[in-house]
Image (tube, rainbow, N blue to C red):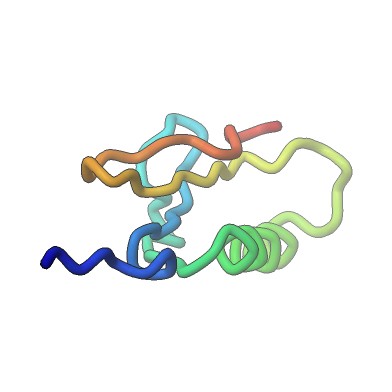
Length: 76
């Protein structure tokens, strides 16, 4: 019998830079979109303050095939 992984172990999230590469500072894996985006916003505000401009950090999620899919594009 094949054991299916739990949703938490299936998906991981990572932050990417403006070119879509793994973020050079925030290069880590996160357990949820909220955890990843929260880390990104904390870092961004520390670096750039609370300016209303676009945040040049994106979020990707792992897929079942081992690839990454963009959930939030940098600058959006």
